[in-house]
Image 1 (tube, rainbow, N blue to C red):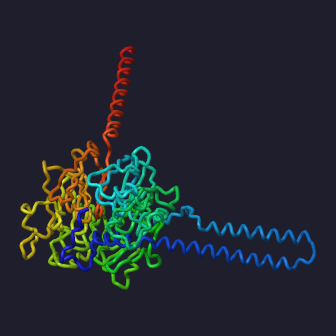
Image 2 (image 1 turned 135 degrees about the vertical axis):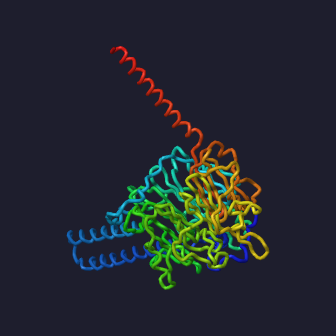
Image 3 (image 1 turned 30 degrees about the vertical axis):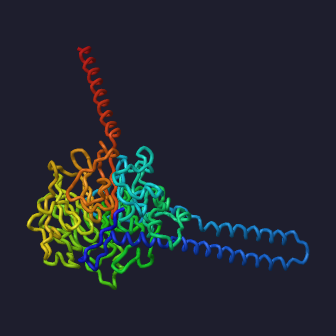
Length: 581
């Protein structure tokens, strides 16, 4: 695999590069093969065992004291001793059962009733099963192709064999920095990828036993080793009541969020900040099992940045929580109040119909079609050419309208670390942000005058939203941004296109492993004829989901049969009418 590109000297001091952070985590995990979670689990088992022994000891003492009072054979007293011993065994058995994980009873949090106008309907479960294709580098198990070392690098889209369309039937998914969460046709969740902070929502320690390696072994040897099978193989999320049905998911670098058909939010994992681990909340550092996050009104959409979350309610209100050091929460967060920011809270915008997020910046579209933005704007990724753009720590401190997207009829937005893409209803893509790694997708000699150059005359970023030129004037129906690369899906044939940083094969263009300067169609045998309808991009990998040709034909055949049946019934009706005359 080609070496990672080093970060440029002008990287912001107050924002960590997601790609570098993931590489660091990977090196730490391989250098320290004995995982901390396993050690913690060991302590838990010891404490339970000690508790059992302690309780058992007290019962034995009680039994002994009873036994010493028996001075002569007495059936009733002997019977009492036997009953006490039986109770001892029952208590020991019940205490031992504490270590068994059982699904909790579902107690949904209460939602407030409101007379406010419903702007956004609660989403429903998608019904079209998809083939799931993965490509890129999977050293953190993010490709979900199993534990074998040879699955760590996939240079073109490959069908994931663990998610068959006719049985597992994935209908939706979201891609985080190094993990994926998916929804099947029954509304149940599946995850795979790195489980550093509990983002998979299930226990993966059982797969670590056979992966313990010598801490002094060479890094190259470790890179060639197998992956944790529990992380690298898609599996259902644990501990969620059977009656809960999920309809939407989102994933960040360190957190997973899921939305139910009732508009309730579940989440697990943790948040990071500039200084390291921030925590899940003030009481919990790592939330390793799914729990509900109460928001007073039903939620219609969720979105995540690298370490923050947005939630849009059915009445057009927006809540945010997580790390707010780059103003990505839409409000100022004082250092002394940073733990309180880990709870959902409104920040003043209303009548919103859509939300989206980059890694450190956020977007919203109001009912009039205006786009608002806030957060880190160091490379103009908010689409606002402010005076501070281009400087370390440049931010948009509160929701601000993006004039460059006015009257463009923007329907969706995606954001990477330092760049963004806005998609119009007509399928035109408008790009803005960093240029260094070809994130914008415009050839350097075709850049507009609004591109900002450094002292050496090199174009660095594009702060004004600019229409993306595409071969044959191709229109897109979906766009996704990774840290420094992008995936777009064509309206015409559902083909996938990619551009941007490609050294870890996340652009899916084959063995070259090079950056892709402009939008380029991904072509290979596995995806030929597949109508791609969904895409996600992480730090060093991508996932696309599509409807295979056979499945596309079935609705057409059904429609033809229905038409024939309707024609037959019409003929019979005409015949009857003629006979009646």
